[in-house]
Amino acid sequence: ANTRRRAIVSPAQPRALPAMDDAALEKALLLAVSQGDVHSDAFAETSGVDHKKVIGLMKSLEASALVRSTAEDRSALALTPEAETYVVEGSPEAQAFAAVPAEGCSLADFKQKVSKAVSEVGFKQAMQSKWLGMVKGAEPRVERKVDAVAEDTCQVQLALVKSGRASEIPAKDLDLLVKKRKLVKQDTWKVYVVSKGASFALERKKQPADLTREM
Image 1 (tube, helix red, strand yellow):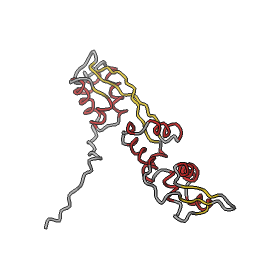
Image 2: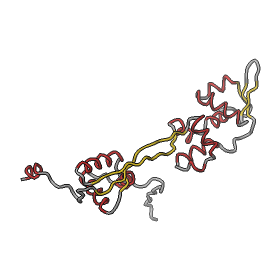
Image 3: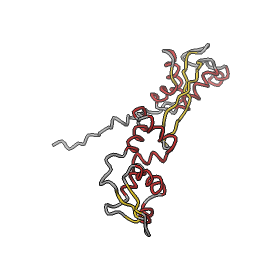
């Protein structure tokens, strides 16, 4: 029997391209510009290099008038570092619910089990969702109001933001995640449309000093 194991490549994680050296990257950018306008972010992605490196190269070529560029503002919703953990571990309210046994527990025991974010924000959200309740008395207790959480809506919505699908979240809920809970932020950055400059060529002209060194 054939016992060789086949490697499985996840489609969600494309194979990284080998990094280009500076000369190859410059040649590739000039060739791309010769065929039409080039967006710096898209070129960086297909070339497997950091966007900042492409911008540095573009500015160098621009100084020689080989290319010219126009800046465009871009923005997108992104998760805060705190929210990133909730995508993996569940929202604070879901973690709060999971920390309470079926028979309930004292408020003091509950607070010892969980982080401050879960004991404060998570507990409050879980009570608003009617998942948990507090019984007041000499020793306050935390009890479950439902047998199980049907869906961790916050976690689902944060995962949508992470995958670039924030438009699928109801506007009211998204506003809550951004403004009140501060789990989602607006990232802004610049990209550049690169086109042919007044002295465009497929390669830089060597300066006299460069030619002298080679002789």
